[in-house]
Length: 148
Figure 1 (cartoon, rainbow, N blue to C red):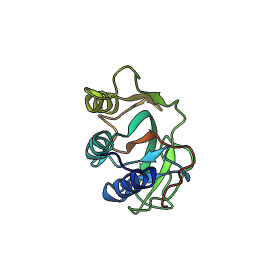
Figure 2: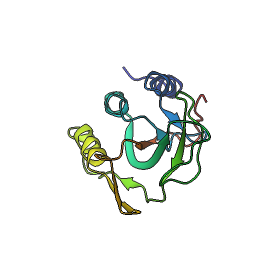
Figure 3: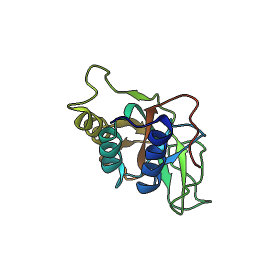
Figure 4: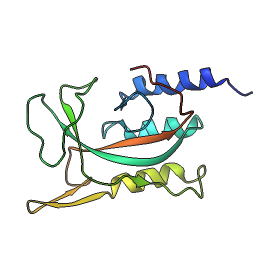
C-alpha cells in the first residue's frame, strides 16, 4: 500500500523530532543530527524509503556565546544548549549505485571515517573530535518545507 506525498512528508517531519534532527533552512538539506542519534536517524530514514544523497559537516559548540574552533557561523540548536558552526568543507556525496541493500553501512562508514584535515596542528576527524557533527541531505519533493 502506497502512502500519499502528504503522509510521506509527515513521516519525515516526525523523524526529525524523534531524532532531534535540525534542518538548517526551510527544506530537507543540511539536516544536522547529533552524533548519538545519527545511526538511528539514518536507519529510520532508509527504512522509510528516504534517500540520503550527501553529508555535510558541522561543529557543535556546546554553549551559545562560546567560540567555535574550526567552523564558521551557523544556527543555534533547537534541541540542545549550544549552536552549530558550518565547516568550510565540500559535502560528501554518497554513491548512487546501491540505495537499498548496503546503504546504512555506506552512511556509517562515511561518517565514522570522516577526516576534515589538520587545523592548527590538530587532526580534525570524526574519531578524535567529538564536536564534528554530520548533516544529511535528503532527496524529497523540492516544494516540501520542514515543520520548523
